[in-house]
Length: 268
Image (cartoon, rainbow, N blue to C red; front, side):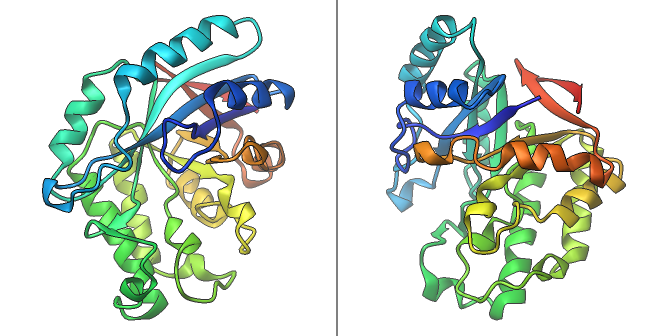
């Protein structure tokens, strides 16, 4: 089953892909099902940054029209990637509950509401290990206060933006924090995604690292989605076929899809 459950379009400020372009590229690549998951990152009012506020009143009519137009060629779901920040989790929940999303990703794109593009700021957490651990702990604590999601997005996303040299065994950093996070997700019936954007990074590793995915599976986690996290046409579906084909070698034999926030499982 070839699916892509993490896609961005021009409804996200950092994407240049029109929704129709994303859909037609997915059809061209042979995908059976996609979920468009544009950004919704609510920040405290004093931050004065509404860059990633999703215009849901335009989003739904646009995507619903495309669903109907392409229904014979591709299953198209309407999702959202919610960026978590302290002090606004109730607003995030209210937003998700106000619209009929098929699928919700909860992700962390900032630390203490600060941009992860600020390399000097990222160097203030006590080196690489301190930064990884701070990121994991912050993600875990924010998820404790937010329940309106289906999967946790790109768990070790910090790898893509950190000001430190990546090493292939970085997945060992903060393992106890990650284990606790995975156990909490499993206990709550939540999943994780395998995000192939890391294959485009010089680390050439999925996000999270496959050992973390294997650990989720080993602990009893069952809900797994895959997504390329595309913001450009060449990145639609990037690496997904290869990753999906490789999963049985890790003992993972099923993937998850969602419709109206309800999970279904599909054998590989």
